[in-house]
Image 1 (cartoon, helix red, strand yellow):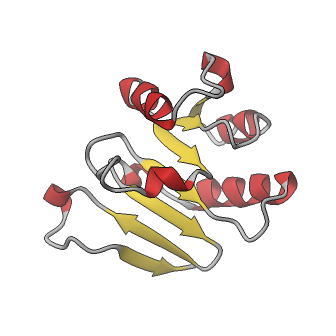
Image 2 (tube, rainbow, N blue to C red; image 1 turned 90 degrees about the vertical axis):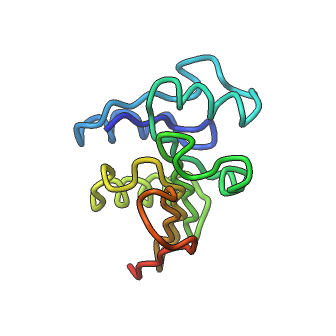
Length: 132
């Protein structure tokens, strides 16, 4: 799976996720540090990459509706310390079939995963929720 790490995720995740056989780039790799979220999202979409982020703005379905991008995964760990975030992201990616999340807006917290799928993939306009 092609992934882009937003600037709020550690660059040290890149080799870890690459070792899990993902094609990973970072916002820093492409000079996107301090660029607007819309620019980061546009670049990720142009590269057909799912964006992994800690930024709550990407959960705004008016700006980033499901199906209008390759996918957005908003990670909400209990602790935002760098090691805790890295472990949370690695565990989620290791345990999840990311192909199933293509085109979706996903919010991951320690106890559940909420998924909003593109309209053509479901009859429901509601979030799907899965306990962890």
